[in-house]
Amino acid sequence: MRNSQWEQFGATTVVFAGGGTGGHLYPALAVAEEIRHRRPEARIVFCGSDRRIDEIILSTSGCEAVTQHLPRLSKAPWRWPAILKGYRQALSSSRSLLASLRPSVVIGSGGAASLPVMLQARRVGIPTVLFNPDALPGRANRFLARRADRVLVQWEESVAHFPRRDRVHVTGCPVRPAFLSGDRDGSGAKFGLDPSKKTLLITGASLGARTVNRAVVACLDLVRGFPDWQVLHLTGDADYQEVLKAYASTATSGVVLAYTHDMADALRAADLVVSRAGASTLAELTAMGRPSILLPYPFHRDMHQLANACVLADGGAAVVLKDRIEAARNAPVLKEALGSLLGDEARRRKMADAARRQGRRDAAAVVVDHVFELARQVEVNEPECVKAQCASTR
Image (cartoon, rainbow, N blue to C red):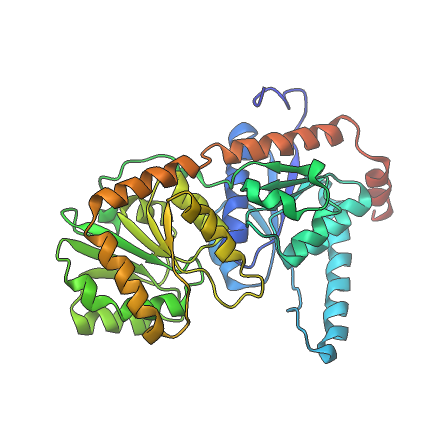
């Protein structure tokens, strides 16, 4: 059914709205790749943020990218007029963009950067899909969920947090094809890792995580006590030099990188992962079946990463530690968790099996099924309001 749904239609355009973090972009890219696999002629356009991470991630995607210059949200009342003005301008730009592209469907990948395009799409009758990968939806997604045609979520635990449950579907979180194929052998060679040693992967996701970086640096003496282990540490740009010097000064066996486009190979080479608990990161961990120690982001008001991490921990796939922010407070509990797992292969294997059971390797295909169904509706009978809106901009 999946390959035949659009056989009677011509080329189509799909717009993705959202960005600002890898967690918003990577699942969307997985969906984009699945769309191009089924419909190579489809036009795919990302409307992202003006953060540099969008440029870095999308630069290798082969997709068109449109930058939205959105104001940063603030609780300070004196900033609200400028914020409101900025969003009004973004809404106007989104209206013109949609009139030009006439997409079959708009997919919101989450966060504030999704708002202008998703709202304008709803206004002119273009079908909208909102993807919410976190266990707890944020404010922007709760707002958009009341207006989207469909809401797709990673975990069953999320459904209860949406008011219109009849529109919510559990699909899993899409991961890119690279996370679904390939052999472990040779993956570490790309990073200069020793194939005879086991690998501890440290990652703070696409932007890095300072508290995780410093907690791990404070534990390097423990890691050196396991000579059959080495470290691949992804720091983010801000902490790269600091962490690199720490490894050099302590003579710890490892490779330190600010960022890698080859995250699938990094995970494939890993025997244990220390990480934040972003939703897309957890989807990748479960798709590849990797045991993990998770330190959820501690600065967000609703602690949504903690809710994400608990899903894996409840299934036996991860150990969750509270990020106490200060390295001196994080190090003792991280050392205990690392010491327990680095020396216990049977436990790591059990956690890996649990992670694999939680993975939804077909998530991208399931999401695209929903996208195709909505796009089919507009291909068959394009809404009159879309035609009128497009005509008004000519």
